[in-house]
Image (cartoon, rainbow, N blue to C red; front, side):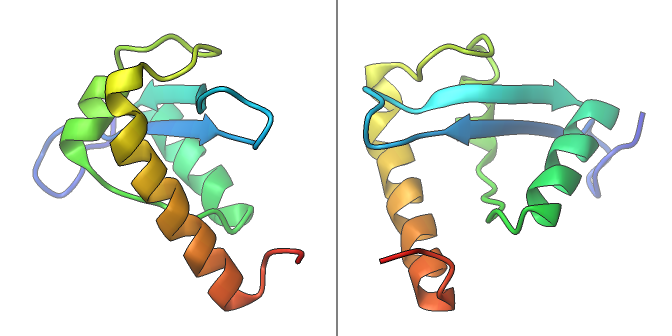
Length: 95
């Protein structure tokens, strides 16, 4: 398995959220090769990659297809807002 720069196994999570959802949903998660593929797919789709080790560890405890718990709403909402801002700035959003 490939390690990141500090020698630890790479991990990744993918979230999905739409205005009709009650909370963001874990759509993919993995370590090593799976994490690399999640990141690769995100980059191919021009999805912003956000890194936060503590949040990642919390999200890794959630099963795929499950909503994030209420205690993570604020931090994930801040990230979604930031990504929305970046997409709008780049012109990637439909008005």
